[in-house]
Image 1: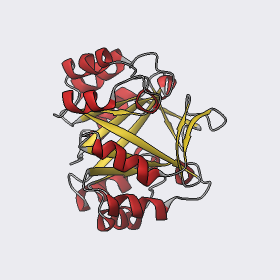
Image 2 (image 1 turned 90 degrees about the vertical axis):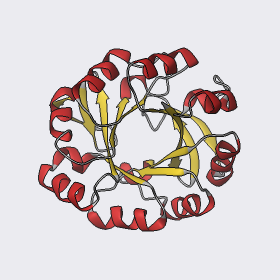
Image 3 (image 1 turned 180 degrees about the horizontal axis):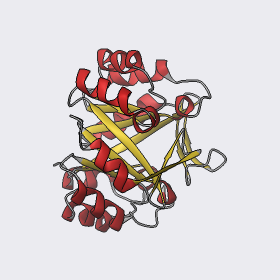
Length: 237
């Protein structure tokens, strides 16, 4: 398993939200480029970039994403508000290794089939989960679909993986939702990327034991709860 630092973009800054709530911003760093270069210097192999403004219809951070992709040699996956083929193509052309798609991929089966066929093994679907129900549109809409139904659908496509975020754990640093991740890993052959609530190296080892391919970390790294360099060294795949 590898660990991937998250760079969540809001108004051009790198932020961390508690519980996915915009009013609960705990971390704000004004220079995302410096943040990315610091994670690279500490030994991480990949970055997870999310455009929170695009995801919630508040604008976008496209220029910052361009700079991040230009300045790092790491494997980078980018998501947030990507709902058309053109946006996917633009990110891949700009240097993204993987593009993370969420809302439309889960709401529009036909579109997902089309883009998965056009960009095989380059797309990661973000399945955001609150108490086992899928949430979309920047975590503001709860779908009539649980994680088991979602995984059954997603497993039919040539995806690079599925990013499962336990939204109810996000930013709280109270531990990963291990039962959720265990169920997801057992339900699919796709690479599973875990996110939400991860706070300790024990959490990471338990996820690794369950067959999780990667873990996206945010708050635990930004607050110093985890030793970033030590985590990068231990979890290198």
